[in-house]
Image (cartoon, rainbow, N blue to C red; front, side, top):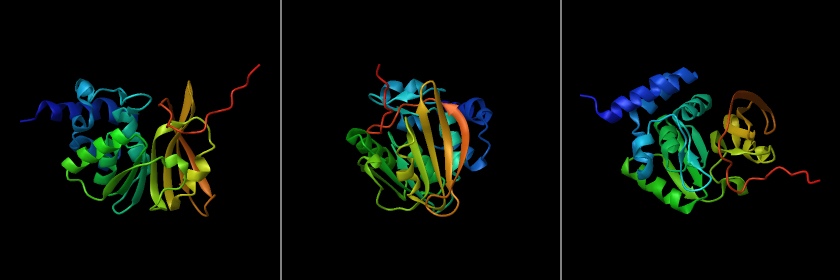
Length: 222
């Protein structure tokens, strides 16, 4: 007999994720099997499968399920891919990337979030992943180049993009949200040749909190 969580996961996929053009069966299977509630803070358990962002302290959040689905679908992680995740938060997307076959390095700037993510991921006995406490925007991350890079917060300007794209292996994919409210663009940057040889695809418009320690646009002052 299906549990309430099983039913909630099924409804999340059928009512939120699939209607938002997430049709990759591997992604849908992972989202349908992984217990999202295990990664949601206790205070927000009632929202574990809701179509909302879930606050994680100040200025950061768990992305809504449909956004996670679009990110995973765009990155096309395959078995053995080396994956960098910037901003693992509670570890939910980290777990999804690992379930898709990725060897995941998560870099979380908040020490408490990083410790919590490690604890949750260890409890689920997921392999081929690690979560480090560091600022991934301070420079290239050890362990590259990467086949996929997932950035879970937005970049107000394009200034950090070269540092991120230079960490891509040939054929590597970067999912990133660029811009400021009210209009941010979710993009997929794919390395098609040399380090600077990229193909850009704009996926959809969205709005998510900015990563910490990223460059801010210069403000014009009268």
